[in-house]
Image (cartoon, rainbow, N blue to C red; front, side, top):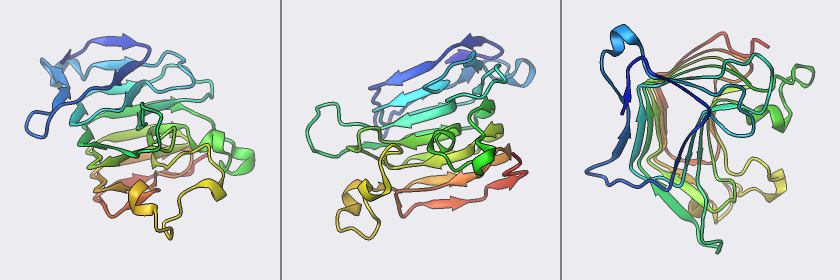
Length: 224
């Protein structure tokens, strides 16, 4: 746990951490959060990754943190990135179960606006508040939960799920394909988040088979 009011700079990287359904591993805060505030994680101009980077973890909860980047310059930035891969390098699809992001305050993540192109460039779409994807196309999520977070003043997007962002459209696994069930993310919940003052979309949910999106409050979107 991280002490209330504490401050950290750079990236918090959580890789290959596995709890159990009965005893998930929880990264949280302790102390007088009401008075001192949540632990602060400042990217400090970090590019190419995320302030909180999570890879190949199961039964893991990240909660009660403030996540931001002090720089006001646009760049390849994310507040939180959840990545799923197959480390063995074979063609098996690896499922990562039970990841939860909750009660986070993600703000001032200045990604790429791309206003001249209405924010449609890939470079801009993969920046913003919270992203989840598989960088090698061989990972997937089951029971990924993103709930009760506040995401404010970020661009390009508030919350986004992807298959593999770098693939061409023709290379992606179509929901109409017989293989989609093998690759798709299942039982994803995006609920009760407040998302505001975002460069473009509040939530862009892709690659889901079932799941639930509910109770989110979204305003002042596509402001740039």
